Amino acid sequence: MFQKEQQLIEEKIKAYCQANDIALAELKWQPIPFSGEWGFATSFFQTAANEAKLGKGDKAPVPQKAQGIAEQVKDILRRAQDGSVEGISRIEAVKGYLNVYFKTSDYARRVVDEVLASKADFGRGASKGERVMVEYAQPNMLHSFHIGHARNTILGEVLARLVEFAGFETIRASYPGDLGLGVITVVWMYEKFHKGQEPQDVHERGQWLLKLYVEATAMLEKKENEIPEQTAQREAFEAERREMYRQWDAGDSYVRELWKTLREWSLEELRDILRMLDVKMDVWFYESEVDEPSKAIVEELIARGIADDERPQGGAVIVKIDEKLGLTKEKYRTNVILRGDGTTLYLTKDLALAKVKFEQYHVDRSIYVVDVRQSLHLQQAFAILKLWGFPQAEKCHHLGYGFVSLPEGAMSARRGRVALFKEVYDEAIKRVLSVEAEKSADIPANEREKIAAQIGLGALVYSMLSVDNNKDIVFDINEALSFDGRTGPYIQNAHVRANSILKKSKIEGRKSDDLGPSTFDYELTKHEIELIEKISHFPNAVQQAAEEYRPLVMAAYAYDLANTFHSFYHAVNVLQTEDEKVKRARLRLVAAAKQTIANALRLLDIQAPDLM
Ligand code: ARG
Image (tube, rainbow, N blue to C red; front, top):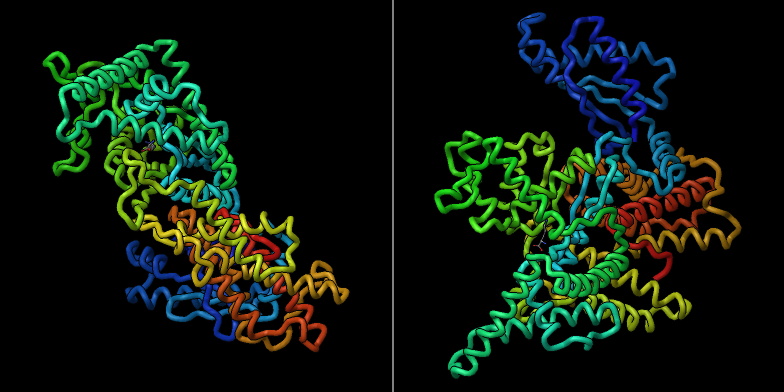
């Protein structure tokens, strides 16, 4: 909020320290919580410690030295009260800290004016000059999109929005798993028993592929009390499935075509779900496309002495990660990167994928949104990238997330026991519509469906974001679609209320955008102060969430902001305010709150409706 002032003050401090040979440490600024005045502070402890280490000045203890520096800086800043740093009411040096305070009316005006001037860009960070790739929404194909995939996609999209808004150039990437026996099982089942029976609707067809998988798994599974004919039948099917896998691997054109067609059905469903979730992928990598390149990488790693080729002894190609990194305790273990029969592993393909990300897309940071159970796998991949010499290996990050299960137990694609995203989504809209029909008769019928989708999805998305990513979720549809308490619709409702105040004020002939400058030179109520303060924290919340790669930070912020607004709404009757000047200031504050709520919701991939 005060970058400009902080910068000006910093320049003066730096110049002073340079002229006086003081070893200034990096200045970190923190807001001072409101106690009659707003301000920000920085400490000189690190600088004092630097000085002590260099043996400069007297032998005073560090805290005393820090206080001394704070006082000197305060003096030069006071002398420089030449108008270059606006709006400062006073500066103090306390316990090694420099506290800079602003006039309350000035601060309030600046917060509100900045939001209203920046609009959708309020809170956007300056460019960081670094490129980030966020990889998410990478389900295995032909298995249909369930609520666990939705958690992944929502976390990934929100993280992408956060890092982008915080100032990173951001690339969104998907990496569908499109090979392996599980995928081929569906192709085999289709070819053998269901050719031409596919439903035409995109979602029905995607879900139908999962049914084929469930059917095939049951058929190929050994049963209790099998009669010999059944055993023979099952074994024959198994042989066919394996043979098809072999043909796929050998590049057989018929099998490849068939596989491509089915993969495309699966992708069509995925693309439509991404559209529903407002996700626009920039890059699509496929597991099958990095398979061949990964073989060449194995050769390179052997040649460079990173991998050991034990094939001559009847073994595989392995990387003794711990040993090569010089670790004495077991951490990453030893890993196979090529089997004796020449086939690659999941890990091998991840090495090839990372190379493409680094070399073709020139990413400085690479984030993987993947289920926590793959944590060791990814740490191993990052460790090998380090041995391989990629500087970006240090900036690879795994955003893990906990398991999503159902009240009746773990989801299982094999058993067909999954909560499909599309079904939950449809149910969400249905529920909102039935409530709206009773409560919101004033919403035009053609608007209702759109708003219902915004709210239903808002509830679902927020339920996935308000839980720490590391925690498991037992997905209960009633809980996920609840509209009370800490939920998406509660936040959306704050936006709707702010909007309704502004709309009513227009009816009375005043436009919120056209109210002139905000003047807050009256005694602000507690609720106004709290709201202004919350709004002013938004840019920090953006930076914190992006730096820590934690969507939860923004989810919690959005709820707090909405909560603060609801309290303000109940306590302060904006439209009934008698003093015209005060009313104008309050209307601008409401407009600023509305904008900030909308910006926070947008980062959370939740729509901000004007009515509900
Ligand atoms: N397709 C994988 C799965 O469903 C997730 C891919 C994760 N990304 C990666 N680069 N390994 O388990």
